[in-house]
Length: 437
Image (cartoon, rainbow, N blue to C red; front, side, top):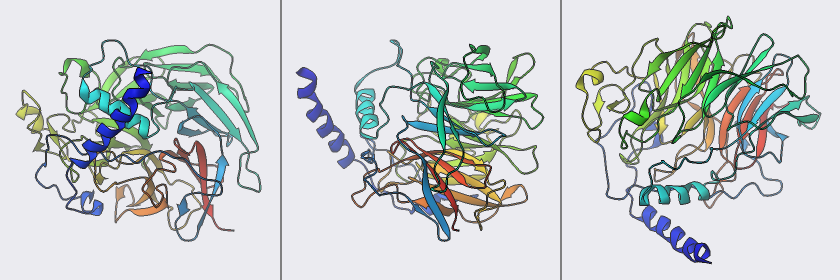
């Protein structure tokens, strides 16, 4: 009874927090591209809280594709699908997953309590299914023809990568490998640990994986344990980074750092340049800080927590590190403030003209901006290996007329037929965008 009594008060408190925040003075587009506008920070006693309430899709409702494209539900009734991986034979793997339980030593307080309420409202506080589901085939209705559980009993799985006859899966705390044969629909062999990954409090729990083109290396992305190291740098050891893992030995080294929450990773068309989509920091106002995608330099430092978008110092971080700020690399392309840009996929063989030479980005949507940003899939055109031009909408309509979230896009992947797959973890759907017949 006590919990039921407190819940309305908690929701009222969240509404009050939202009312006390500030409002953006710039359009989202001002914070996009290679040279985004970066106004002065606008900190408030109570940060802006403006999360879209998760309601799911009504019968017959679906997102809106760009002109000339069509969208269908490739698979429905999944359990919080977050990430996608397309196998060489065309089978599609879906990580049905969510955050692991918080450890007892996780920092608490009123702020984290309120954050939990916000996460629940956004549809992000559900138990993790801890499985990888395999979808096969493409029917005339645009849906998968079969579904099976490939792996289960995992620990908040996310990233996946196939190298030879070994399927690698990134749990919240380690990379595991499993034997795999083409066409296999269920794996019963136990996973073998390749290497541990930084875990614990898991403020950012998703661990993504991508294999090098020659299959000799894996790259694992690990987000920070905080917004701006407010709990100290000790718990950030090895985090806000991308690790390089040697497939043969399991040995790993820090590949790049200062990346607050790198999630999506993709190779540029040269097959040599790794790109990542990064969620930047919060609570500097609705116009700061833009998320971004960037090419990743071996040994590069990208500023977090001491600075953002190069040498823009975050004065909240104590003690300061001007030596590191001086080394901070300016990201290649801003994706808008608070858009929560998570998914990243090179267009590859996409049959989605004119979206055929660039990056698709799944924008999960903001909580710390008024008005809201993200909640859509965009495309950034490239010329050769570099972004070249304004971002374009590919899939929109995830927010309804009342500003509620019917869905939230996360992972994106191009399938073997040239369609774009989009994981929707609120609608519990995998959407497929294709060219109209």
